[in-house]
Length: 396
Image (cartoon, rainbow, N blue to C red; front, side, top):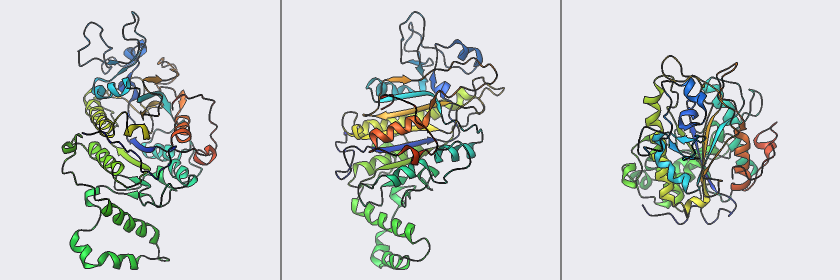
């Protein structure tokens, strides 16, 4: 793949990155993705499912964690990536990946659907705005252009996080979005344009969709038969990130891309099932990173990977983990404070509960990202009722 030299449309201001937001639906287990191997309680509570600590005497052991900090200390006191995330090690070493551990939104909900709704709305109670945190940010900030592709979800639906944005798009597959030449020649698109004019219901979404079809057709993005043809894994997430890359590299001024990553609810046999999930995540992210270019395109892109809540500290009877509280967030891009694990580590002494405690509110991470990489924001609008703690260049 050739590095992309332009990662943002020329009309997008220099103080705005393109945001690629990936939601790990199902509550990803952060403790096995980023292993606190310095904490003996991790191994005490996960006797059968823990990732082995890095072994200085056998660094090529593919079953051991990949050390990120203090590898050669006589007393291990660092973090290690799950071996399935090996492709992300170089991104970390490049200084373009930050890992925020023990993070989340303190909503006290353990139901997937309800927790996803709250975290995408950016609130901790069921009351509050029905719109999403990202949609409110986009409504607060002026569009860089009049493009119908300002905010797009590469899925079959608009996520709650984008609620409140002006006509966000949901496109499952760019290759299938639009009309074939026969329909174009028939004049049918003009019939639809005339039919869905104001003031009929749904005229706004219909007009936005038709405008997006015209814009995508004019961009003339080359079709890709398989993600692997462009260097991406032949997986659902690989295909979605490939489409994000196609949009970014085209002349379409996309500002925000939302992507779902499913299948993170590992109640049973965690070692068996989390490995392919992490392998897919790492392969797709690394392909996107290489495609955009670590020293070129990625300088104007920020990728946020987050989940609705984490998993409990102790393994369950099915060699999996149950719904918990804090988890792990990933920040990737040229503008992040990469090459480090950012965590006020709470420890894994179970005490009165089995949850990994939240010590970094995810809304703090997102606020700094919006402030510094997406042109500024208004915290009271994006996260009503939330007071941002004092931070100095913590994440970005």
